[in-house]
Length: 264
Image (tube, rainbow, N blue to C red; front, side, top):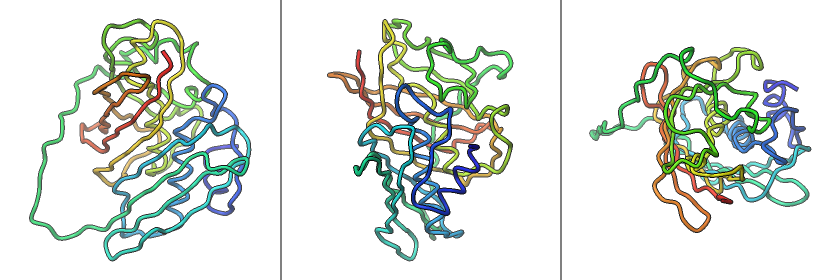
């Protein structure tokens, strides 16, 4: 099943099957789960004058590679902002929850532009692809990552964090207009920022994830984007990190913040 077929089934029915190739260990890739929920939300509200402002995801439990049910509820529909919740169900239990806010432009005198500058990377063809690819889960084959800075995962680095280019793999996905749901699927492919500090292979998984969108999505699925993560704090089996995403023209398009559960 292609990604396009999956998204169409989400629009047309409550229960959907999961395509092959998206496992992250023994469970479903979190980015796909988040993207499925956001696509359900966007299709439900059908508000062309309202853009996605932000969304928050809680990964309640592991999603298996079998059929899931997606339920949707509009929490509030105001003049400018619509808030909506989507849940993923499996085995009669909620496994993931997304709350998204969509808003139309409003008149304001306030303008602030203090966003971080985009990093300067070598061209993608001059950079190595994701290190330790043989250790990467199945879902990594859906994307391309050109590693620019930072140590490899599981390399016992004394410091965390890394950066680089990333995109959907053109060999796996047909080019088309990119959506916000696609961006969620793409953005979660980067490993947690603390993974270079692991001295052996061990799991780490997102617990909560918040994304803020700063620009309308005007991209193609095969476009390259820049990513940089900064770990702010890690202790007692959890870490907190923030990340930025820029387009190829160095325009900041999204801010990400995650709480990660670590097992090392």
